[in-house]
Length: 228
Length: 227
Image (cartoon, rainbow over all chains, first blue to last red):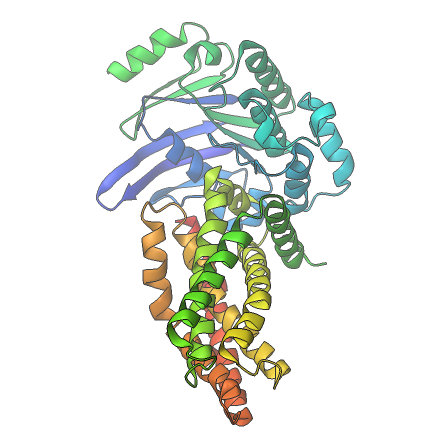
C-alpha cells in the first residue's frame, strides 16, 4: 500500500499544530518522523491512524482515503507511546480481545504465534501489570501487528527498551518491511533510528523542514534540518 | 453474531473480566450507594416510619450518584493506557464500542440496584414486591436512559483534565427527564395506595427518552471520538 500525504494541516482553534505536510511512502519503506517535542509528530501519526481528521489536505492509503472508515482501519496497526494494553488482563487475554475486536479467525493460533514472536509463550497467562517495559512493548507490538496491517504506525517505539529488546524490535520491523508494509515511526532515538530508516521527515513547530533518504550520520542531518 | 454485536459483546466481556479481577468499580459504587441510602435513613426515618414518597427519590439519588462514579471510573481505565484509542482504531463500527461500554455499565449498576432495592424496602418500608415487574421495568428504563447519556459524556471527556467535575455538570441537566420519570414512576408504586396506571405512563415516557438518548448517542459517538 502506498501512503500519500498531501498538504495536510491540523489547527486547534487559531493554533497550527501541523501545516503544509506532504510526503509519500512506498511499500517496504520505513519512514521516520523526527523533530523536537511539540513538532507535531504524534499529531501526524494520529491523523495517519484516522484518529484525528486533518483540518486541510488529504491522505491517500493506496486508492482509499480515511472516509473508507473501517476498511482503512483494518489496514492500520498502531503502537502508541502508552502501549494500548490492559494491565489487569494477561498477555493472552489482551491479544485475544484485540483479535476478536478486529474480527480475526483462528484467534487461538494467532495469539499463540504472537506470544511466541514476543518471546512470551511461557508467560502468556501472566498479567501485563507484572511485565517489564520491554515485555509490555513486545506484547503491544504484536497486538498492533496481529491483523497483519499494511501500514504500521509507531510512536516512540524505542523508549525505555534495553539493547536486546531494541534489537528484537528493529528485527521485527525489518521483517515487516520485507513483507512490503509501510512503517511510519516517530522517534527521538536517532542512534537507533540511524540505519533503520529508509527516509527521514524532519518536523519543527508543526512544519516540515526537510526530508532525505540518505543513510548514516542521522544526528548531523537532523541537526542541520532543525537548525534551518 | 454480526460484527456490531460481536464487538459490543467483547468490549463488555473485557470490562467485566477487568472488573471481576479488580472489583474496584463495583465495590466503590456499591459502598457509595449504600452510604447515601443509610445517611438518608438516619436523617428521615422516625420510629420506623419514613415520610411518603421519599424512598423513590432516595433510590434514584443513590442510583444517579453511584452511576456517575461508575462512569468516571470505567473510562479512567481506558485513559490509563490510552486503550480507548485502540478501541476506536479497530475496524469495527465505532458505536459498537459505545454499546459495549454501555452494557458493561448497565450490568454494574444492575448489580448495585439488586443490593440497593431490598435495603430501600427494609429501611423505608417501601413495598418493593407489590409490583415487581413494573418496578424492574422502571429501574431498567431509567438506568438505561441515564447511562446512555453518561457513557457518551464519559467517553467524550476521557482526555479532559477536569473530567470529574464536568461529567456531573453535563450529565445531570440533560438526564433530568429520566430522573423525573424514574422518581415519579417509582413513587407511584411506593405510595400507600399504588397507582399502577401512573407507573405505566412513566415507564412509557422513560422508554421514549431511552430511544431519544440512545439514538443521539449512537449518532454522535463517532464524530465526537474522532475529534
